[in-house]
Amino acid sequence: MRVLIQGASIAGPVLAYWLTQSGHDVTVVERAPGLRKTGGHAIDLFRPAMEISEQMGVLPRIEARATGTAIMTAHRPWSSRPARIDYLKLEKTMSDRHVEIMRDDLSEIYYDAARDDVEYLFDDHIASISEDGDVTFGRTSGRRFDVVVGADGLHSGVRQLVFGEVSERFLGGYLSVVSVPKSLAREREMTGYFEPNRVAMVYTADHLDDARAVFIFRPRSTIDFDHRDAARQKDQLRAAFAGTSVEVDSWLDELGRTPTFYFDAITQLEMPTWSRGRVTLVGDAGYCPGPAVGGSTSLAVYGAYVLACELARANGDHAVAFAAYERTMMPSVLGSRKLARVNAKTIVAGSRLGVMGLIGLGRLISALPLRATQTIARLNNRGVRLYDTMPLPETTPRLHSGL
Ligand SMILES: Cc1cc2nc3c(=O)[nH]c(=O)nc-3n(C[C@H](O)[C@H](O)[C@H](O)COP(=O)(O)OP(=O)(O)OC[C@H]3O[C@@H](n4cnc5c(N)ncnc54)[C@H](O)[C@@H]3O)c2cc1C
Image 1 (cartoon, protein in one colour):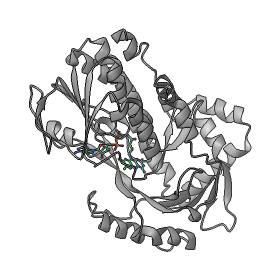
Image 2: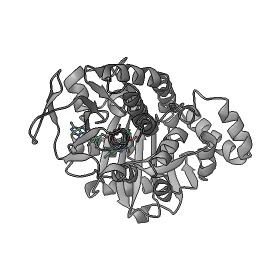
Image 3: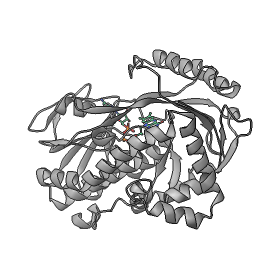
Image 4: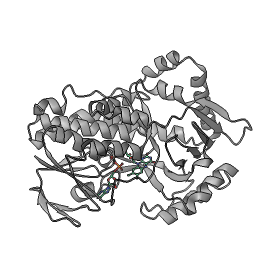
């Protein structure tokens, strides 16, 4: 089968790898001129995504690139003493098998896994898709494909072409990630400033040349947000964090010279189905639970793997495969939406009491024995442990193809 995937971040390269394992011809088109080494936040890989990565043979590389953050220092405006939270214990409480890694590192590792077996078209995009699978591109000449997959993120072009405007839920906040000099962060520590309606943090990792400042905020009134207008977003960010602290000011001072800047509204997609004809969506393009609040990356890796399994199992009948893919994914997608809505309110609490509760919980987990915190967390497989308990399909794409 000839498969075209749009998007070379996380979902795209993972799907491309697994489709080549089942013997399909795979082309990936990506609008950036090369793999996007453009920063972004650290992301969490939970157990199923770790197991999929292990099957791909890339787990040792992923683990070698872990951020290594061990401690979180949490400042609050009403206390002169910052709280120290055991970050490793927090992670181990949430997941039995987990790694925190930068998005761009992970993207590169997945891309390398199948780069020689996949045709990559950078600096291009899909311009049109016909019902028969005829595709035109912005630059490359048109071709026919059996299946087209949108792995092109929250603002997916494939989704726009095939579904038009779809239902989205704004979760009330914005996320920004700014690359800042490494000297502004401390080794193995995440330094955070927590206030009602705004949180700012900075951290780095041994292998990085820079540090990443992360800002999450809920404006009191709606802001005029345009996801393509970085200059206006920077002004909005400065205004939102004015007066937080001298240290946060030093991160904001970098906005004028930062080489990488990410800003997005924390928005959730609410599509009841994400396949039509020969086209389906994977990862954020189809079921983004919300940047920063929803475990989107693990869901994207899992979704790519499930789709590849179902295409292999259906022996090329994409209608059968897409229906099975959606059935398998739906419980996790619905769970992730619910969890992200809760997280959006908890991570950036709207009141002083909420901030105190969040930091208090972090301190409690730090103080209790790990076995106790894990036992309590395991009672909540639909909440904090959702991403650890997504069931992997019983077979792999490799087995079906007989390779
Ligand atoms: C540069 C970058 C920084 C990010 N930083 C953060 C962050 O700090 N925090 C966070 O929570 N999430 C961030 N994300 C999103 C995060 O990667 C995803 O939520 C998650 O990993 C799922 O990945 P995905 O592959 O489904 O989508 P994405 O990671 O969003 O990748 C989509 C890919 O499709 C490409 N693309 C988009 N539109 C088109 C088009 N029309 N034509 C061709 N290609 C297209 C994009 O360039 C990108 O490579 C970032 C994504 C990117 C691309």
